[in-house]
Image 1 (cartoon, rainbow, N blue to C red):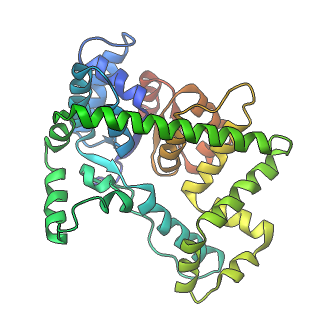
Image 2 (cartoon, rainbow, N blue to C red):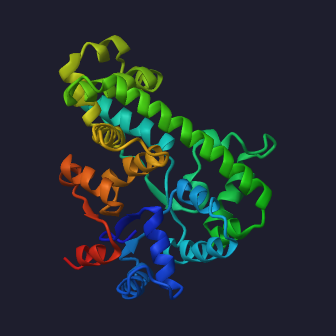
Length: 320
């Protein structure tokens, strides 16, 4: 890997704007030149524009086949097959590292966040959906095939309209339920100040992830009681050392305290992607709400991140 290669996250809307520029219908006139320069830098491997599985899911929700085809070709050309790892693959490593740091013991290497091929971005739960008769050898061959040029385009252009429509309905229903649950939770937390709101998030992580924490502790000869014994201050420091959950917490608290705005159905997916992109990318291009959230929580300073809300802003950042 080129040592000075920069990783840049584009949210779905900015991938769409990039595609419109590539296909001669730019959202802004300046996007045409920006898209051409981005491609030159991609081809020189100065920058990489990794995708996540959520990008692909959102792509398949588009109704018009022509739009899906055009965006698929831009995904293929500009990503060059680079993908984010699944959060469920990154998180156990982050927790093990935070446990080691907290108790003054050896830490494993950082997680491998970026890799080639859409199979790299498939998490453990999704991998369980593959046929049981598929051996590790067969899965390895499939992963190799997914890394090859054109594989992503073949995947996204494969005609499967019935499944696409069914998947869209399922995703919409899950998103609706997630938004309703988040709205109810923030209503319950509204009477409390931000510090208590944040501590409530940490308590939820502790409960939901206790098995992963216990496994990391056991590897170092520690028990879960040792973890709880850290107290409020120690647990707060611990969760701030888990990069993806640190970002998830700060963005969730920020969103939940925008009282004039209801929780949007896309929020959970947006925060989930940013939880990985913010600590591990060099730059992100996102909608104004999330740019403001990242900057006002100072996550950009903590992780050395450039934040843009437009492709032209990104180009200015890359030239600095």
